[in-house]
Amino acid sequence: MTAMKISAIELYEYDLTYSHGTYVMSKGRSAKQQPSNLVRVITDSGIEGWGEAATLSGNYLPVFAGSTRAALRELAPLLIGQDPRRSTHLQRLMASVLMGQANAKNAFDVACWDIFGKSVDLPIAALIGGVLSTDLPIFEAVPLSSTEESLDYVSKRSAQGIMRYQIKIGDDPVNDAARARAIVKAFPDIFFFVDANAGYTLLEAQIAMRALEDMNLYVEQPCRDLADCAMLRKISGLPIVLDEAILTHADLYRAKYEVNAAAVNIKLGRLGGITPAVAMRNTAQDLGMHFCIEDVWGGDVTAAAVSHVAASAFPENLMHTSFFNDWTNEHVAGYQPRTRNGRGAAPTGPGLGITVDRSLLGAPVASFS
Image (tube, rainbow, N blue to C red):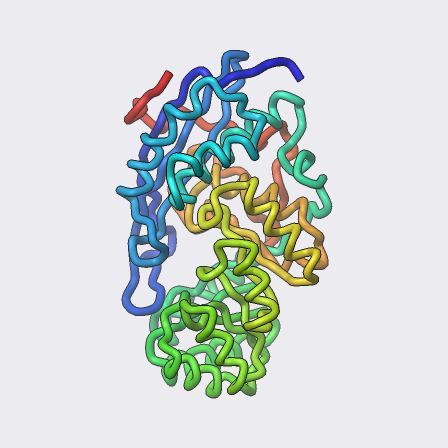
């Protein structure tokens, strides 16, 4: 390949407002908007790439908006002069300076994959296994709210073609079970699962899973600790999917062989980008596990990155994915990719396959060269 180096990096900040009012998770975690960051990585050949790092809240994962923005500024100078196509090298380089801070690393990793794809005139999906699916099942989350509000949400979104929903639980286990039961009963032809976002104590999770025992549901991340999730297998046969607790391949093995988890949620921002997400996806496939591919939060750039990882996954192992730009009002790349009738596909253009409109962003908040 012709030599290429990163010559400049620009950082942009903007807010993503939730398009359905207030996004509510377990234990009172809620927000109407979330801070997001865009990175523009420019090469000496004139090719540029875009990546995004959005945060859900400071009490969802051990990261918050301020730490992500500080980490972006810490990492950017390190990448100047590097070849953006050496993804594994760049991951090692970033790890040598900052432990963790996967959300910030995610933005740079995605931007570099965008450059790689553009440099060879191929979509990212073609570089990480090839496109195996052009018809991705899309899910949306039903925020924690009253039963009536939840029923109204599903009714409105199902009219737009969404047929898969993650019901947020994790507060009061008895009320959570009653609400989930009412939602499932009202929409017998829709696929539902429940997600506590690690909000339950072990006792609360035991009560909830016993109350849900007779329902055809799986439960995502009932408790934060893997050992607690493993103990729940003694009291319930409901399938468990793990999310927040899975950061490494060792965690993935523990999920299968200690928790007997049916599946795992792979999020680019939790792991550090496309590079580690694809590695974990491939390991999960080898282990015969199912998975969801998504991210912590984001807009058009995040949706595009997620779509490429999902489109190149084994279709038989992919449960579903999410396009976060369906959840948010702001669109920096023309609302692409976009869900249609509850299904999605990765863009077919080179790199991410989308075009960011810089006129919508204003001036960069920081620049490095």
